[in-house]
Amino acid sequence: MDNGGYMKIISNKITKKELFENSDHIIEESFVKAVVDIDKRIIAIDAEMHADLEKYLLDNGSKQTELWGINFHTEDDEDFVEFDSLINIRPRQNKHLYIDDENIRAKILEVVDEWILTI
Image (cartoon, rainbow, N blue to C red):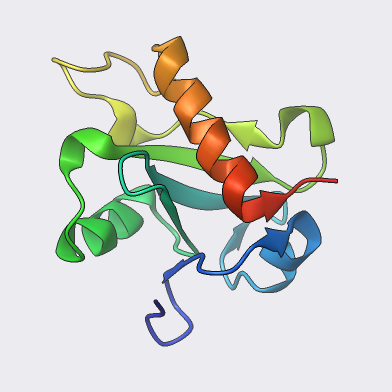
């Protein structure tokens, strides 16, 4: 699924290098924002704000409770995925930018591993 070069859902397995080469919105030349739907097991990328990606997925049938904002970092392989985003703040589900629930973080990493080769 594509949105005219802006905001896209990863639909083919890609490498980490391809992720950054094909993203128009690399923030401060160090990371790409993404939103993961842990139920549908998809990742939306390539926007200036997580909220734009969240709306894009909601408009395509995702449920709010299944969407989580992350960042993919270009430089540090050890911290490739960062679990911080304003969209993660939900009083009933998560009280911080950082995703508190270890099980949700694990599900996100499973989805990332399905779509992005980090080696």
